[in-house]
Length: 458
Image (cartoon, rainbow, N blue to C red; front, side):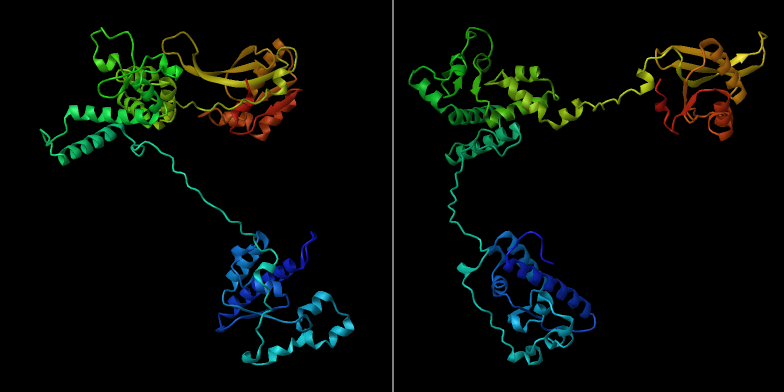
């Protein structure tokens, strides 16, 4: 059936070809169980559709491309040929026939005459339509791709500060051997590690503080205001260090004048991450105090909090359990009423009571019936001798005599009393017990659902 939305004739013809391909694929699967199908042939009276099927589906727009791809996938070895509309039996049903014409219509019942000829006599030629004249062809726009590779620090692929310094020390030792400068010992010394860390810091400063280095080298005023207040200078090792007022102190030189690093430097991130792991995933204050002994990182506190927030272990340890939003209170809790007009009832116990003050007096179990007012949360307690219906009715009568008859009583079905005996089930679960309760008290009795004691509220 043609869709209600307006569409072009070639698109409708393509949908018809897709429907034909689906049925032919199903019939081929059904017949292939008992027959060996060698060739598959299909005809269409649309030259546009036949030309579409001869091109790759990527050459057309989405609507045509999807259906061409589906047809080519269902019948990959099918031979599509052209048939004129006058010889196409599908036109008999699509254009309609009178009943009197349909009975004697040979084309509809016997098919076109070409089917009765041999395969060699079939005319399989398809009217050729140039590609630039085919509808739904995708416009190919020339695209010039320009690749711009941003420069980055050479050590961005390292995930550990210790590993970065160790690899850098190995590279520096290899360069020294190539220059015929043999190492004094086979293992890497602490001094080599320190020199490797200084080389990495120098590389980071060349990348982020290139203008600052030129200004300091030519004794020009520093243009960066946040850095100018730090009184930076270049030391004898060609490193930019932070000035200060501690030059006469007894502290080591690397603590009096720490190395200046940018907050965007990957080396700064590795340093903070290293001290965060070494100190056992500590707080930002401890990490900042340790980092500042050697390096002065701009916006250190912000960068430290960023590292901690991305630490998987810290996130798991400091995560807070989600607190669900509590539901609204029921109407019985927020409606104004006199005390004990709406009460909830529950049992407490059992409690052991001696029958007399004798040393070996017999002990018996008693229970406490708790009546809670839903309006003002007042509590009324009644002693109950056992879990029978008669004992509870007596306690309820005493409550009514003291507090008045409530309009609504809320209770559970006894399932919250874990380990209670069958007498409690007889009281609140069996139909006989409920009928006795509801008939003896002229009020509305509300039973909570089973296994849901939280429905009782108070």
